[in-house]
Length: 473
Image 1 (cartoon, helix red, strand yellow):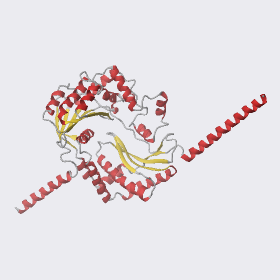
Image 2 (tube, rainbow, N blue to C red):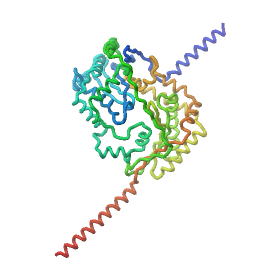
Image 3 (cartoon, rainbow, N blue to C red):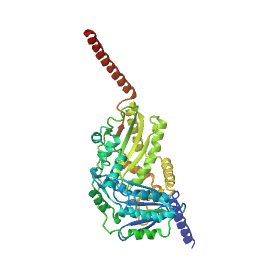
Image 4 (cartoon, helix red, strand yellow):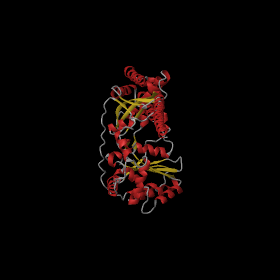
């Protein structure tokens, strides 16, 4: 009897402590929500939060730049803008005025893998906002004048229509930053500037038909929900045709040579340079993503202490993880005087060798892990913030819950981190160097020589001119 009571008590303490440690910092119930999948494949995710009288609505469509070749990658972006250009029931001005009257805010974005439409409105008008979003989705008019207007907007967003000279300069890479070069060679971006003036109405209609399907959409609603909200969503979106999801294009990432990359002729003048060690890593769907992300926090604090505080070599040394769903880079970078580039590279190599040889500090791991969790917990206080988190985490949705990122970080131990370091960060890095073509001192010398040369030429020409004039006189 005593043994049974002690066993039950121990189990109770274990489960209580497990539940406590699972979510110490995250908002209660952050990862759980209601999910409804309509027969046509349309997914509805709702999260009831009553702390503020507003609702954040996000419509996520599974289409992005990576679904198209470089020439046509602006197709989803163009459709995104067309969606706000007016419907058969509302003009573009009507849409703006309605949202204003609802105390609302609208936006949209196109990424490598998604197109997202955003409404944030007072909770009294959430049903009206959902009806408007449905009308935009089903009744947007792809007229030629609206298409041309959207093309102009897309070009302005990317720095206006590029001239032939600008296109040549971009494609030839002489003005590329070192990041541009690396991302283009690895397949993360296109070499030429984005253009949309060749895109036709037929292409837009075919793209819309192929990707804007119920089975390729998720509607996320977070906030103070009305009882009629869910029934309205079901009634509106259940009538969309049941069609199989589109076959998404597989985006391939190329492995890069472990060599030194440098920028072209830009920036032209300056005394400051940047150097970075880049390591190729898997994308956000990898099982090692959270370990790599935590390592970036640990390396960030360590490189600051070693490179800035101890050595005084750089003002802002950093470690970051930059990934897409398919891959990315773990980068350790620092700003440095232009004439100390080789010294900086030597110090970064020494920094990495020390980590590989001596491992990670246990106290630093726990300190940075706690800092990461605390910082993460305050990012999702508003309904809009939480809706954005759900949008970015759809790959981590399992049934009615998102993957618990706090639990993921808390479960990472020293052995796992050191194994991740050896797996991804122990080899030769890609070295990225950005340095101005000339220092200010050298540029000043060039200017002085140029002015002296011009002065000598002008003096020589004028002397000959007056000499001839005096002879003729």
